[in-house]
Length: 407
Image 1 (cartoon, rainbow, N blue to C red):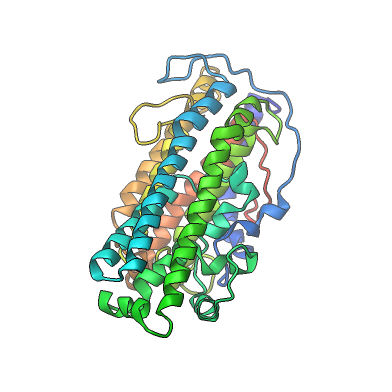
Image 2: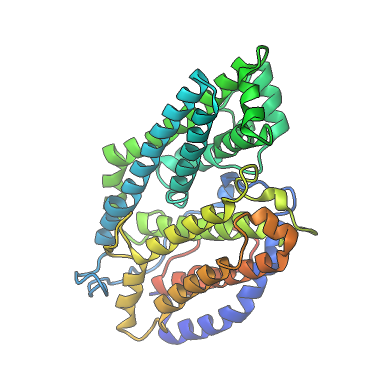
């Protein structure tokens, strides 16, 4: 470790008060009123580097009963969490594709309802993999094509009707993905009948059908590419890179994990709609804004996935393996953690309790009682400090992205 115990304790004590304030205030530089939730906001600033002496990880992982090593943790992440999560997503994409084809073949209410449910199932499955922006997902900027919001509905409609859209273009990232489907399935009208009318219209119905299936096919293709890469080659590469350099798997994955929690969960799902980074609240910035009533469900799914990853919980199971929590538990043997794993998990539980106070539709929550949204942001923010400052210091991992938080 590059800092001794005394330095760590002092740093931790100071960081809880000072850095929490700077994280809350200075984000305003990056995520302003016009911000989109997309990956390119910060990745150009990523830096490579090497940290100092690696941590000796040879003790027991509490709750696992096996010797703790970085390599074993990477195996648990890849085989029990990441790959199964992508398998679930692709399976849901299969169902979404089938439902889209059935609806475009026969645009009736039954098929529309089935398509809406398949969309929601896939959207929930997306929340379990969004944090894994590494390997092929990072290479093809998967997140940018799958879940950029808010949607540019006007631009999408214009290119849809013109028929000259290119879904591979970075200029069209806010006109596709789950947000586009949200609008196409829920935002075209107030009733199912009004929505179906767009797909049965003699003049433009065919264009809406084609665009709908093109968007679904694109999402299905991209997620399948990422899963195939994990299974065919990247899984082994990911596990083999078990060193302590900044570009190795553990350091990269931990940075991506915290980056996701900070920028896409805390800020994207809560902070921006609540107006934390602007002069007023922005209810139209919530996720799944056209469906209504599911934005809180998506947030809860994302939060559960983040907490499960911290604890090494296997995907869709109760069993767990080597994890960040286990690594912290090992270091606790030297008395250097101050029960950090408990602090982080306790904060997750406080977040869950706070979410019980929110409306199922976060847009309505913003409009009716935004104070509760702001309170939710503050509670989420405390785990940014615990993980980004205290945990990274303890684990001797350097932040590899630059932001305006001041931490």
